[in-house]
Amino acid sequence: MKQLSILMIVIAGLFVFGCNKSSDTPADPTGDTHTTGTHWDYTDPAGWGDLDHAYATCKDGVEQSPVDIRGFYTATGVEGVLTTSYLATPLVLTNNGHTLQVEYEAGSTITINGQSYELLQFHFHSPSEHKVDGAPYDMEAHFVHKDASGDLAVLGVFINADATADNAGLSSIFDNFPATEVSHQHVTGVEINGGDILPVDKSFFHYEGSLTTPPCTEAVSWNILKTPVSISAAQLAQFTTIVHGGNARPTQPIGARTVVNDGFTVETAGHSAAPHWDYTNPALWGDETAYATCSNGVEQSPIDIVTANTTTGTLGDISADYHDVPLVLTNNGHTLQVEYEAGSSITINGQSYDLLQFHFHNQSENTVDGTVYDMEAHFVHKNADGELAVLGLFINGDSTGDNANFTPIFDNFPTTEVSHQSVANLTVNGGDLLPVDKSYFHFDGSLTTPPCTEAVSWNVLKTPVSVSAAQLAQFTAIMSGNKRPVQPIGSRTVTNN
Image (tube, rainbow, N blue to C red; front, top):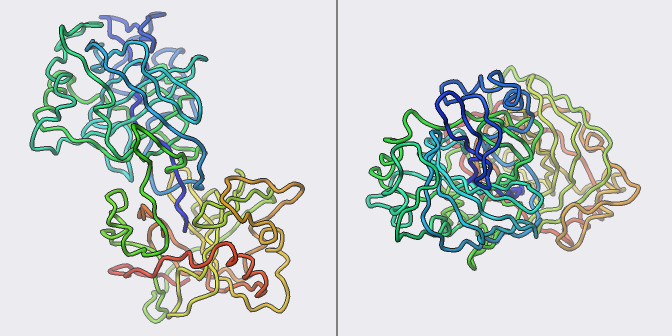
């Protein structure tokens, strides 16, 4: 199953507000202050929206941050380039009662998909506000940028306190944190460069979110780096001694949003984005640090389903509510994929998941009692909590005639890499591809492509569908052998409904 890419660098803490006795003066990212707002703190973030009508979005917004990034969320594709151009700047620090912040003078920028944003400041949270598969980090830095139109982009960086020595790139900052509230305190004779704080590997997640502090304004471009940087326990204590009790907003519902996993090509200081992978030797995927789960994971996919070892469970029926959608195709170099617009869903054992896309593998990745099918389709879904469910469909090239339901898709497969190519005047309905008998096997597994993230609900239909040999050839002429070998089942149980 093709892992779909994302851009997300996690450094955005967002217009953090300066505390002023009985009220807070919200700090504009430019450094200018504006209307005095109602006092808020981290005692009860869930109540921020009730403190002041100006903070109503904290409660009523539909694209709030931070989020828990789980599994993979959308199609791959080269959608843009991210480049940082951070310059050295005099060290100027602010303690606004909610965070400790480094002010940045004009001239440093980040470019995302051709759009330039100016770096305004970066600041810190402990523990991290964003999580990945439920796991927080010790800290998170938010690099806050603004473009000429006033739109915000935040680069997020996870930080762990697991180094045996201090992080030199952060020492001058942490050693000079102001212990009491102060704005724009200059540290004489010291310069810093935000680029020195970033990891070499700049692969990232991207999603649309909000400020993580009141007024929780939305339409913020979040870009969160996957690779954390390390500091010492002593450096962590330098921060937490000043910012007591934690300054992290809890994660917010992902809702209908899409998180892109390496969806953008990332280039910073001459470094490329996520490591390249292909199907030449899948056993080596895990040698890349970013893909370690491919070799270290304990619930990897695909698997060989041994029917004699399955258990009969009380799984509910699968109910697909797939609608007609315009035909939009992607060739991402690893698979051929049909993109699905919002509104179609599947219900598995009472849980509803939205259909994001479906794509194909040759030969089948999952097998049954050692039997390999000519192809396998993976219908990728996500629920409101960001959890993934994949519906697997076996396909054999044994039909004497073309399968009409597959014809508009197979006839229009792009032969070269392209993202979201619309096919004029054609629609498709994924439900037409499925067999009438929707009995299935269920197991917990992973993505079948790097980074092989686990906690994926796998539901593999027992009954295959047929296409013609000519249709099979349409796929294999473009994409042949894009399958990961079966992985050990370990202590997992496959349920047979």
